[in-house]
Image 1 (tube, rainbow, N blue to C red):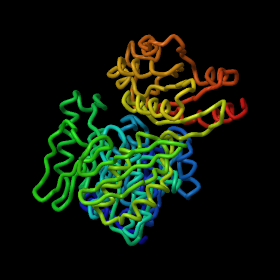
Image 2: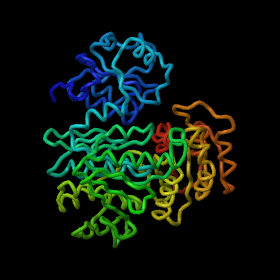
Image 3: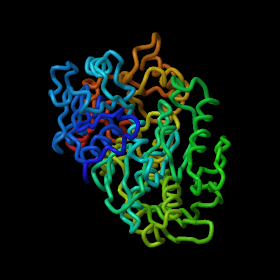
Image 4: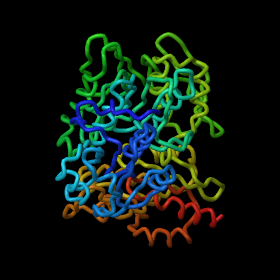
Length: 470
């Protein structure tokens, strides 16, 4: 694509940028934006705290990444405020040296959500919001649209297993599929043509304060849908959408009749089939490409949105059958008669419960061992009782220390506190090193790594250890 600055409009303040610098470039949302502006012809670089598979991929694509926050580590071409736009994520501390330099020297600085809003504003944006399910649903929707005659661009909150990336580009399509993140009220920067809301269970209470304000944000999000658009909302959510005139409202469900729903769900021989109902038709015996029961509901939401945007019945059937999931969403790395190993991003009690229940349905007679890394001190504090209850559904629990991300420690909030709330007897608190040593002599069963921190760095060594045990 040709270089263009239309995506920034009034924020450019008269400058003519040739480059972007991303603070926190290794984040899943940030890396998609970095890839996008690079595809538009801009020079792109960024900083992240540590190397990861994402930063490794960016570097292979020609995007420079530094892991040292000193300003001397930034190339000179990224230090001209007349030529460079800086993009940051709230996870970057105020005192980060490069961030301070850019603020003090008059750079155009954008939040990640601002840039995403500018990029997608002129497009027909299909936005997927919700406490749970938004990454899988948006990635499903992107696949359904991308493999159809309609096409789409997509900014995803996970790495699609179908495409091995979090960014899809269609030169001839004006559609954009976006994961609408409620953290830091980011989704209120979007201008969706249509939207999905999957759930509104309280989360990010460090931002919203209480449940009422959290749900109000989703109501405000619904008010942003453009005239002539639509909201597809899970049936019986406890919010009142604030829809503009001429915006249609649809409901969906995998458990009861709605405008879009699934029934005749059959789970057998590692396969899931169901009938998909639209307001005026039925697509019978749809096969879900990933045999995970909770994804039937996500599939209904994604298929509903695609159906409303002219994806044909045959394209829906083929697309949902060929969908292969999202990195770290119930990914099965080892599966034999003695050992199974599943990795999942779940970090909220409801998400963990869903993952555990799915594993129980797929492996009903096997011992289930969960390895959980709590994410954020505030979330651990706010949902400690719920975490304790849901982790007690396992046969064995191994806790790792809390991953702090952007937060400082909170007195009295740690993994040992959480361990005390787990009611099963077979529970342990390990460091990462102790965990890997333990796994070399552990019993057979279904192992699950669970969490949104850096527990993903353990997936490769755990997979090697478990495969060597067979």
